[in-house]
Length: 84
Image 1 (cartoon, helix red, strand yellow):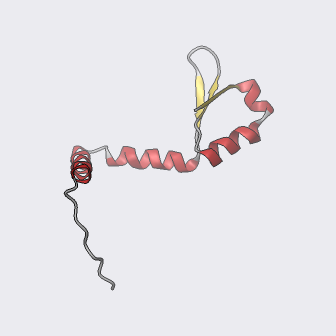
Image 2 (cartoon, one colour):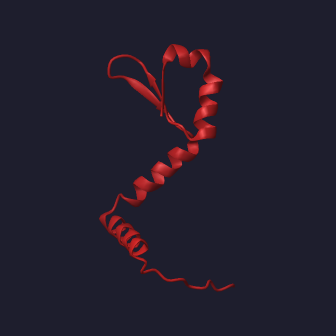
């Protein structure tokens, strides 16, 4: 995670945005006491939105937790995909 002030951000916008998009960094721009802005890549934002959606219902959350436990315990299996 990167942090900067609005003044420093203004001086080198391109460099900061390159770091965010190329290195999957999150940038926090401080704007005073308890105030700031977060900048992240579109890919990271979309990933967070998808995760939030998947965890938005209790049924999905339980299904994901179950799948994670199966992976950890090694009780998974493979299936062949049918070509259509």
